Length: 319
Image (cartoon, rainbow, N blue to C red; front, side, top):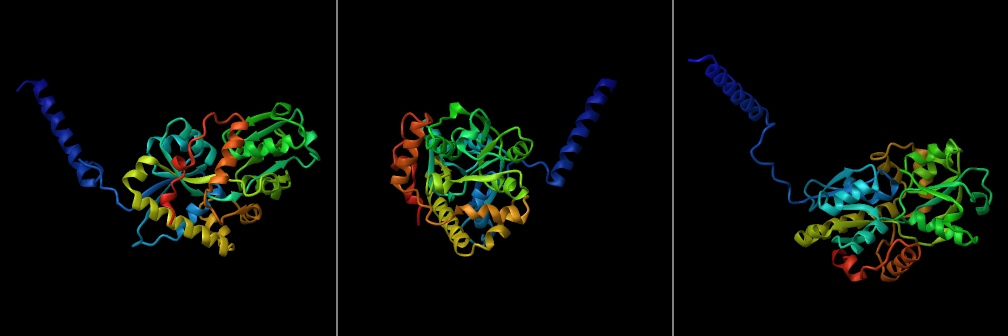
């Protein structure tokens, strides 16, 4: 036998042996393992605004109708890409991002709010008035956010606009450090990042969401529309468990920090402080609330055409 033929035979034998080893170890499979039909993949950012998701996961039982798979993301654009393309079934997400996606023709369905209020405007301790922010750098996590709308409300009440400041987008974990280093004069973002600066003494509560826009919506539980169409019963069970978890957070507030501590790398004092200005009760997305939200978005230049309420809000998923 020629030497080249021998080498080919030996190489083929080695390849067969390698494939056999993969099969034996369970690493190689001709087909993916079937997904549990009760599993719902829900995306989140590590913030207290996603606490109902965490509580739902904590309250899950082995024989329950829903099995939650939580998938963590580091930024809103990453999370929205996963939601829009169906890599996840649903998410706790900024409601403005979901409304904007729906305006752009992406099939998303909002089931319920994640919370109400829950945001603060944090500034350097020496900022005593809104006028003191003039010309300074102020951070928000995304322009399509309640945080931007709250800043607009604060400025408008004092005859100012964003053009009087330098407004920048920044990831939430960066903001407390940026404030401590005085690279920014203030920020508005999801918790616990506002409370972190307050507890550390590097920032102060300049204004609360409930003072600027009472019962303001912020994050919502939003599903990919294709998932809802194909799994309506499972989606409805997911929403029911989510609202049950929200009830637990409302009526047993001492459970909040404990549950959050299982998912967020934040000390207890910061978590407790962050719960001072957030509500997890009465999370229905009412039509009047939606109208006010989309009106504010239009006035801020974030929305051109309002998606109809009945197309965006999936009331059929509520218990």
